[in-house]
Image 1 (cartoon, one colour):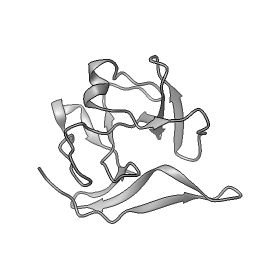
Image 2 (cartoon, one colour):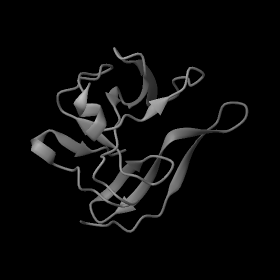
Image 3 (cartoon, rainbow, N blue to C red):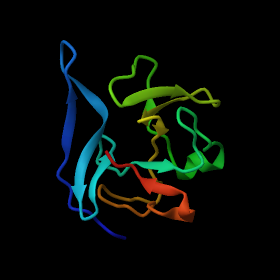
Image 4 (tube, rainbow, N blue to C red):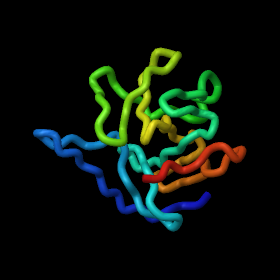
Length: 123
């Protein structure tokens, strides 16, 4: 499995008190990419439409969503969508964000290119 050398740089939003974005930016051999707070690579799915996830059921077991809480609010390029399964999910520039169950450690990018429709989320 490929590993990227990560230097995590949390993005900070200025809105009165500073709030952290739901994703971080890391640098790897392929350039900048988005990760969750634990450094796990985030992905987008070509079958999603802006503001709506097409990944449900067994898909979510393999591609866990970047979950949002009821209190989370849209800010900048990040927004929250309500999924048909009742969960809330973060999006970046309208595209829902996911991790990949087969990525075992921060920096893993095994999900990039899966079935030609899963791609690393890039800022």
